[in-house]
Image (spheres, rainbow, N blue to C red):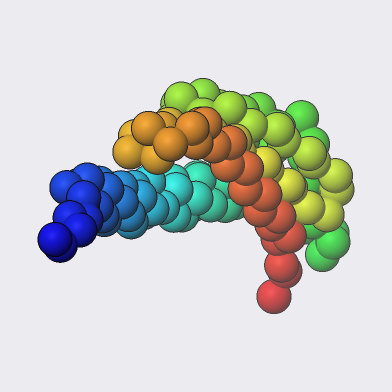
Length: 130
């Protein structure tokens, strides 16, 4: 008599494993793309806010222009506010540094326990006199 091997669940387990692998790959593609896009957008905003603020110069006629700290801070904060962003602004006489942060929600990777991801980008601008 031949012995029977029960393999009824083997194909199902393989298909479920393969399906999970495809979902994880799709999640990495979708959510990874969203993270990259968000980082690039934040970098643009941080740099634009810093550039906008660094245009607030005083002492232009003396040949050694300095950044007006109060006006520069107001300009950067206004830019961030206009674009509904959360950030920090640091200003000294020679440079403006803007750090912008945003939380990006995971969509597909949330199914596997991935939490929202905080992205933070810092850009520094120094005006040049030529």
